[in-house]
Image 1 (cartoon, rainbow, N blue to C red):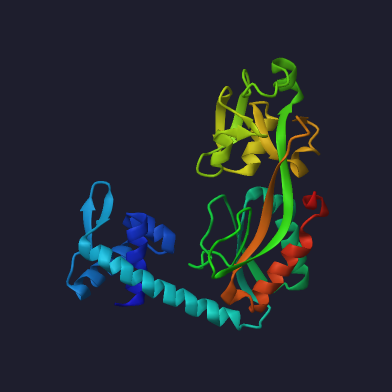
Image 2: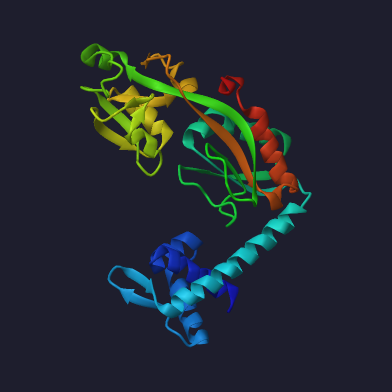
Length: 291
């Protein structure tokens, strides 16, 4: 099985369409279709059923997917091992984090990195989805979840706190919620269930069964902006919200704490450029995050 064709096959298998695979692999759709045809011809097997809802793997396709994924793992391991012994302070390093972490310290870390090592290019991906370090979707990740994979190494960066906030206008109109009422009579803004399922049950240690969810968001900055707009009560990082003159802390004695980690694949720990980016991030964590 040719690896170039196999990786395109995996793109179709995961995306479910030629267009989705083409976007994922940054190639044109015609090439994707042509490579799939070549692979099916070489294997003398039909790998997908073409349905109105997309491409569905046949039994032969499912078998091919398992083998192709093993090829993918081997290819990525080779890349990591080669990058791991690379001593050059140049090249691209892929970094993934959330928008709030990017704004509050990762971007400053990248500025510090550029001053020291201008030949290192950073590909920064901001989002709430956890990129796969083992599949080389990223080289470094700054996240709030500690990885469980033995192939990944992590460093604890800081412990952060979050509390409940609302605007002065919201509280003047609706009043401060009473503890123990399940936020009765109040509107809340929370993360989508797939990002922070805890928020659908509790905010600031308080059950939310009597509150009205008026908005769900998928990023931290949007949660901040929705709360600042007076849409409802939101649970926000204290280092962000305490300094915002538009927001008032509700129940300041209550704080939800969580940890922040720098994560990389163990094979990349010896790469000079990856280590340089990691060092810049570690040095740039603000002291206020330690609270």
